[in-house]
Image (cartoon, helix red, strand yellow):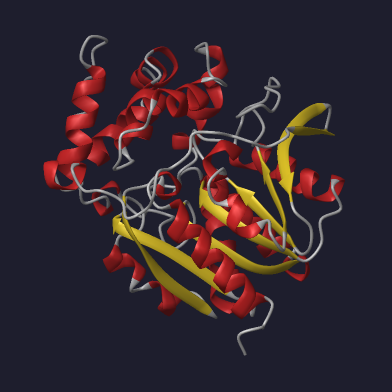
Length: 336
């Protein structure tokens, strides 16, 4: 398979063109989300807790049952800024920054899935969070559902969207990624020579994939917020490692085992689950969403509108209202 060769002068245009062609072309790019103006403001007090000698940043709003928001690559708690107000009125809404990401410390570690998981589990233990409802996106999906798999008694429910977890993962073969441009892009991210060039040096994940996976144009303030944690190639190591953690064609084996365990929990557990999906989606398309009730127990699927991968930047109101209603009617049982 020929990889997309991205040269410094052309990499952003090439990537954006490839991504939009793969996801439906200009008609998708011009679609408008069905929400009011989306705020770039992050009006939350940042807090820190020390885990294993490093500080984890987080925000916390409201009181009541705990709802823990976990982001993925290459975002931070900033991703949830327009959704948390829908939850914090009658819940204790907490959103952390994964280790090495957002405002959290960047220790000299490998940043493997297992590294991130230790910090997530340590964060929950340090804050003594109990009876948690997890709200998960991207690699936060894998981390959060693995926590639920290992700590089922401490989880009340799970909300997922575009999650790096079953049924999206593992990927048995590269050929299972139907879009050749997206397939080639992620092969490039995992290439030992090309990956560091386009992610560490050219900052492709922030400058290309992130805005290319949002339907509306991200404003300068929003892009600056996402850029801020990664000013240097060295600071972008976590972003580089994450694509290499995707279990494809049996590798890495340690994450194949993780996903198998998660799939077992999702299929058998009694905890209520909510899967939010969009069109066209990137990890979960509407067609894939129709399959979810066959592999997850006690699950609802709800369509939130137009979106690619970072749905929170296109449909925060719809997502927020769906989570709030589901928490009230299903998790708390008030709708019974």
